[in-house]
Length: 129
Image 1 (cartoon, rainbow, N blue to C red):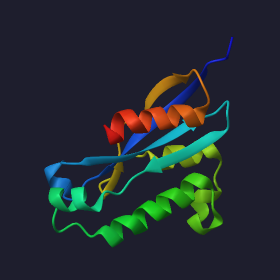
Image 2: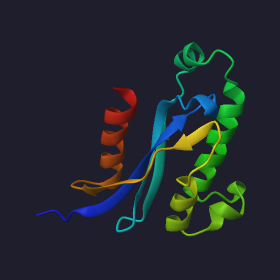
Image 3: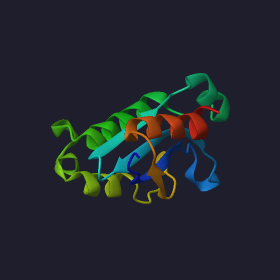
């Protein structure tokens, strides 16, 4: 029987106008301590984003996502936050903020397969469909 491992995830959202609290789900960030796993998966459908918010600066959004990804992977180019341990990086990435790029509240679950397969499943369910 395969072990189940606790994981935590948050949905990555684009919030073009924070004051309106409208958003589009574009990705998932997931953390599993037992599998030493912290990864994100996202998609930028520029046509959909522009139809949602015509004035959205896609290049600025890409810059934010790039920073988010460097921190997630622990890349030195991500600065001092990227050098923190995996749990601290996840907590920083999922902290409440008022910017164009936000995350949902953190949700728990149990991996019944690999963390990567679980990330793919969440991505399909919460972002793509």
